[in-house]
Image 1 (tube, rainbow, N blue to C red):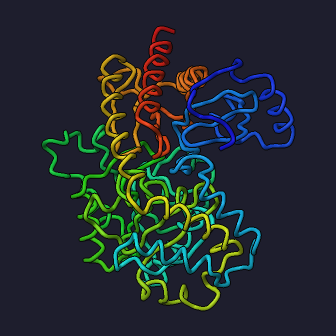
Image 2: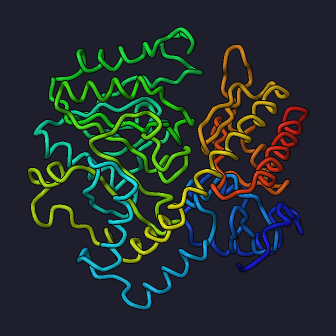
Image 3: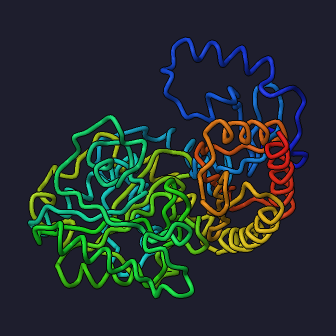
Length: 449
C-alpha cells in the first residue's frame, strides 16, 4: 500500500494543484488534444491509487466513482495483481501468441466462471479489437454478413465497431461505415421508443427488432450484437424478456447472439457476468476491461465449433501481436482468484443497492435529475433541464458538475448528460455513501448557480 486511503476524500490544495498544473502543461506539450473531456477539464495528474481511492501529485485523495473508466473493478493496485505481474515480468515479457503456463492457468480459471457453451477462448488486447474479431467470427461461422445492433450502443472506436453504434454522437464524422449493420431501437424505459411505461409495455419494443429484420434485412443475418446493460450509452438495463427474444431470433435465423460484456462483466452488474441475471446464454461473449485490473486484455468466449469454423478457424487467423500475452493472463488469473470466494461480488451488490437507494433520495431533492437507474455497481443519473420534456442538459452544465465533484474530492470520468457512477466493487459502504452525499451537495451548487 503506497498510502493510507482511509481519510479520502482529502484535499490539500486547490483542484488542480500546483504540481498537477506543472506536469499537465509538460504532458500537454506533446499529447494530442483529444483526450477525454473530464481529463481535459480537471487537468489532474494522478500519481497512484489504492482500493477505491486515487491520489494526485499534490497529495489530494479522491474517491473514485469511475473505476478508471470501469476497469479497476477490484480497486487500484490490488497487491495480488501487482505481485503476479511482477513475477511474470521476471520470467517472460512477451512471446507472440505461443502457449505459456500463465495462459493455461488463466483459461482454466476463466472457464470455471462460464457455462459449458462458453469454454473456448480467443484473446485480444482491447475491447474494440474483440468486437472486430467477433464480426469476422460471425461471418465466418454463418456465411452471412448482416448484423443487428442497437441505438445508443457502444462497442469501440474502430470502423467495424463504430458501424454497430446506432446514432451514437461520437461516431459522427468518420463515415461511411461498414455495410451490413442494421440498427434497432433500444429498450430504454426512460425514453421508450413506443412511448409506453414499463408496467404496461410487455417488452413491446421486441417487435421493433423483428421489424428491422423483416424490412431492412436481406435475410442474411450473421449476428445480433448487444450489451445486456448498455454502459457508455446511458446505463440502460435491458429487460430479460428482450434478451430472451433476441435469443429466439438468433435460434430461428441461425445467427450468433453476441453479448458485449466488455464493460458489464467481471462483477460490474452484480453477478460475475451480466447475462446470468437474464437467464439468456449467448453464443459468443466478449469480455475485457475489469478482467485484468488495468492491464490491457479482451477476449472472445464461445463454443469450439464456432471458433474453429470457416476462415476464422484457419491457422494464423486469430493471431494478433499482443493478444493472449502471458502478462495479461497472469493479471487475469489474479483477478479471478480474488473473485472466486464471492465476497467481492457480494460487496458490490450490497453497496450498489445502498447507493441506488441513496441516489433516488438525491434525485427527489433535485429537479435537474430526470432518472436514476442501474444494477450492481453500474449506476447513473440522467440529467435534464426539464423533467416533463426530458430535455438533456447542456454540456457546459455537465462540466460544472464534474468540476464541482472534483473540488469535493470525487472523480467521475463520463462527460455526457448521463452521469455514470461506477466505483470499484471493493468500496466500503461508508465511503460510497459519503461520495453520494458530496454529489448531493454538488448538484445543489449547480442548481443554485
